[in-house]
Length: 336
Image 1: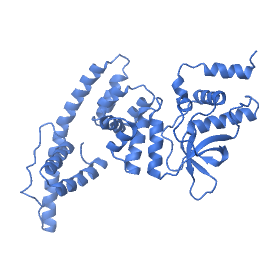
Image 2: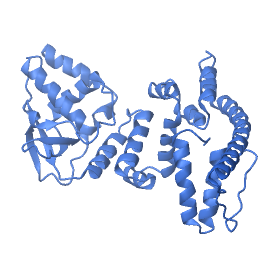
Image 3: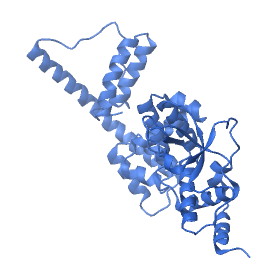
Image 4: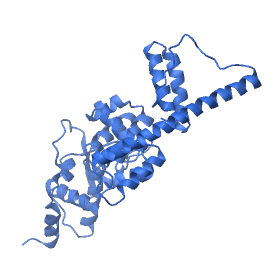
């Protein structure tokens, strides 16, 4: 007859969501010649960047610990030597496995679980690799991006971090993780949502498809869209899309007023500067003409002109205006 401890393990392991253990049960890597049994106390969490995954399910972590105890660790964790601390190693890939080993060790030491012949308490199998910070960020992203329970906002922030801090391009990220550039950009767009909307996406209360419709709305209209969804009635995707389209049309009309006002202010400021300092705005008559469509926002009009300049071979001029537009958008001084 099974002991209570073994029975508890069996009950926890009877979970149809086997994908929760895929990290442990995946095929062995081709090169494991440098696998070492590492004391847990010599392995520290990643110091280069925090884990893209912010939430760890305790039940699923316990299931993983039981799986490793029963089957052994088939996929070792990956670490690199910690600079300036001989004998210490930094976790690169396998934080869940590390946490599962720590949980297993704790349960064995307290007598709650029997020691497994396949797993020595206090130790974890690791592959030691030498990598720079950008490579570490790439490896961590590949591992975390494959997980089904990484929520869309965590995924988007992971992409943005690699772009802003480690210099990855959208194309490089797409190739690295096997997704299209358009998919990467779709996730990045979610970070333009207001905090309330992002929180709803994280908790799965706001479907990602609905959320992506909202990314071009300004703050007030995003709040209006959320109020519609919170009204207690079932709102289909098509109905929500029509509502957002109307908000965008209303917003574009307002943006045209903002665009006109923006250029009026620029002209007034230029005139003030000319009168005060004694100079006019520099203007190039040999450049392509500026085209402004009725539905343009200030940002879209400037972006189109940048593209026109680049297409006509005026790269330096386009980059100069792009630099200004980026600064204005970061400071919310211009409508995107």
